[in-house]
Amino acid sequence: MAEHRCARVDVARVTMVVGLGGSGKYGTPAEVWRVWQSTEELIDHAHACCLFRELTPEERGQFGLPER
Image (cartoon, rainbow, N blue to C red; front, side, top):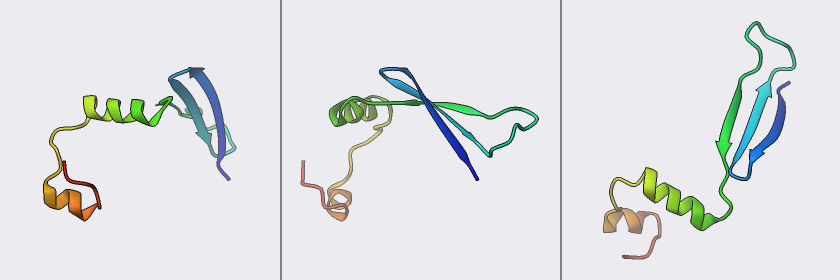
C-alpha cells in the first residue's frame, strides 16, 4: 500500500513524499509542487509559462467556451 506524506515548504510550494511502505535502496523520492493562492494566480501563471497560442473559434466551441 502506498504511503503519502505532505509538508509545506513555504506559501507557494508543497513537498509530497510518496512511498510504498518500505525503505528502498535509494530512499523515497520527493516532489515539490507549486501551490497557487487563487484561481486567477494559476491562470496568470499558465498564461506566462504555457500559452503558445489562443484557441481557434472551433476549439472554443468544442469546449463550450465563449467567443473572444
